[in-house]
Image (tube, rainbow over all chains, first blue to last red; front, side, top):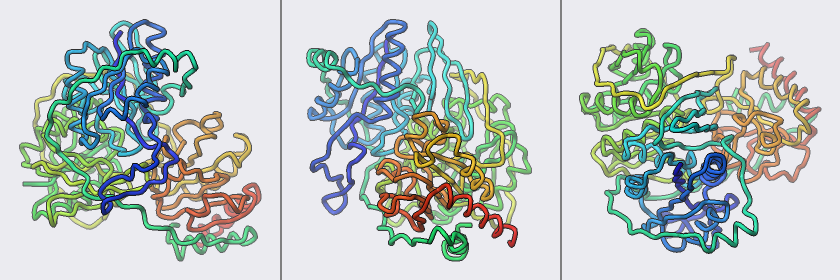
Length: 247
Length: 323
């Protein structure tokens, strides 16, 4: 079974977010880039588990500049067999990224394309659905469980206040959420072997930009916390009712 | 020309977020000088659909085919695209729910329409179509310009609010070609209970490692019950299995923006704050005065949760009784 896992690069979760050029660009200075946790912890690891159980290959794909290669190799260190980087600009919109992944996937014969439910940077949750539509495949979103038997898969997905269980035939696209798998830390053997695993660079295809970010903004600073004595919780109730109007 | 919004239903009833979508769509329609039209799929009671008129919809187009009761993103996107085209929609509003997040991107490709996922405010239509959305998991906002003829807005639940007025929407049956489903839904299970699921909840009571063990969650549930709030937890608590994963709020869990978020025994790591800092009011109860969460809070109590929480529950009971 051939798996394709889409991986995105995002600022480390502890990054203090700031902007430059009149708040039109993310401030890259001193930012540590990591694999998007949803892509790495859930989509990639589950693909590896299924490959280990049933055989096959796991290819990772990223759309971005050459500077991404170092982080892409981490996915190889965790256990992916090979990587493809579409040599694209790093400011493509969702449709541009999806178009480029679809262009590679279209003739790749992948049985299952996995990705995280969203990136922790743009929080778009766009790529999976767009890919599925571009490739005319079923889309299983927000999946917390995936089992495969032959060309049939059973998946569970999060819905508000519950879950849905469904059956789907390959090929399909799946976005993974928490619960799908557990994070894997690459070991020394993985890190060493990652250096010699293939990382193919392919040129980007052009796609119209549907959207563009015109400005960023930080949330307004919070006023100082109002402390209430633990011996006077009634005051908190009064404040929540009269001042905050939250209850 | 029209502003179309997707109506979601459960067991024949319109979901809360769809009333909010109707309110949002009607405001966008007013900005553009047109009308807000709902599109409902599958079995939904007509009386429930007419109620969307109270939130600003003039009309609801209802594709009644019972096969639409089972969800498939490909089928839904196809049907919504057909209705959008026949209604001449130039904006489509879709709530960012588990269903909406799967439909919006497919619809984007079908209609060659740019989509803004995670919208938190009305579009600025003074110069193009620019929508404010959450970014960096709650740490920032991005203003996204949509450059296509048709625009799709993915609206975050509880970001805009349902605004009730008067009026009734006319409900019309609509037809569409329904393609074969790409998936076979085997089972749908929803927790039964009175509280709203986390992404829709207006009041949330959340607790963390400070609770010392899962056996101590009784006081958290008591507090949530008296408020009618939904319970949540921090990541470490879900990771060790004290609480189910679906309760985990934060950067890698569920991002929420309730009216009131009460955090108990949670230190407030940056990843946790990212998922909750758009809550309208934050209350922090922690015995460590240096807990970073206090910097993000509106109200705080420095004290032992095991003493403070039961007292707060009692005080709220008295307050509720006096209301």
